[in-house]
Length: 561
Ligand code: ADP
Ligand code: MG
Image (cartoon, rainbow, N blue to C red; front, side, top):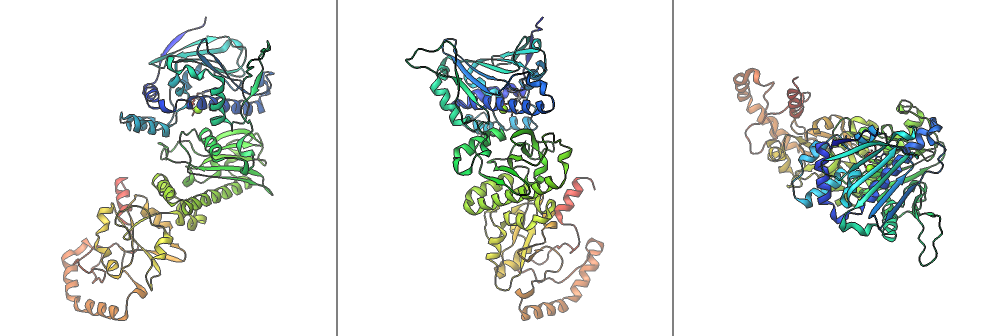
């Protein structure tokens, strides 16, 4: 028996479906890109599994995707001979969303279609986008290696539930039949479909075929399939032959993203090690950037054969937002995650790819500062993990950091260390900074008085991670960092001899007052000193040179230590 079963979609899927149907109507054709992208992923997975289990190929030769339509039945079909799905796979993959952060994402939705359509773009659209144009979707699939009798038919109208039924399916792989909505019939058109495939899926590394059309001639009895895309993996082609639009479309497929990337870097390395990399800077942070188990890493190919998604070993954690592909000629095809852990090949690729990523960001910052400012808002916090994680590149990472400072009243994180150094005053050889909880709290701090008087810029660091960052960032361009809230502030050459003398005299003068304050405050403070860092305020609390900063204390207190 076929064991027909009706199952409800997970709540999140229902919400996503509603949203998708109502907010992506202006860009409906992307459903085809998503379904072709999935078919290509399925072919990649089959090719990889077949390396160790050749039987999975079941004597079916060339991997391909076929797109066909029936204007009478109003259907559009996407057929692949990839890895396929078992009944359980179909229930799990086409009935739930496994992504971490889905709940957070859905809570951000406002009901405003324009805003929500942007959000959903960030979330990724995927399989469910079929329901933008179809009022019923039938999926016929069989997982490679399972007997023909263990195929599955999944069917849904994109409302609350779906049906699954066990069927016979002779060929492995997946066939998706879209029953086009009344007002979407014009997708059942060869010319239109060819155009969409060229536009979005030209870079897909396997043939996407359509039936050859014979206009005005006698059509042969046998259907003839012709390949409509270029069908060579994008990164294997020379840079000069790839357009920006092609790079962008490839990104959307590889990163499962719906928005354009900000920058990319495509390189072929020859010599001791041979590999090609194509790295991208996404335009927005994923919802799960801070989830520990969120997907990260590059798509790994070995000699053009897909090996794994999310190969994390090629980039440090603070660059986990970088997406892309690396295709190695040196690794073995049966490389496993364990083997990938380390070794000279991996290590040297990691350090080269890290450098490439940093170079790509440097170039973005210098060529397109406004775009970089947007990047910084999305990923700046993550980049700040860099100096601690990657001590060797700390100077390079430091150059990419952006800070708020007393130079710019807006509180925007827009000042680079190079900008700061460019504005240093005569005699200044240190980079001054102040940390605190918020911009409002630090911008009028008495610690800044003496700097304001002397016209010296001070960086204002108010992110949670900043104090930790400054623990690893001791100097930049040969200039050391000084926390203006710490210990005795020595302004060095910035103070004249007269200043110093006046300070010493003041200190002598006020000795009696200092003693009285010490007695009065007792154990509350470590020391009382006459300070020369104030111009208007009578007194200030400073942190000892070796003590933990305020932010760190709060973090430790909050964590119960
Ligand atoms: P994503 O591609 O980001 O994983 P999708 O919503 O596009 O998300 O697809 C969901 C899942 O459904 C895929 O991860 C895959 O497991 C399964 N799937 C979809 N289409 C196919 C297909 N043509 N062949 C095999 N599995 C598929
Ligand atoms: Mg997909």
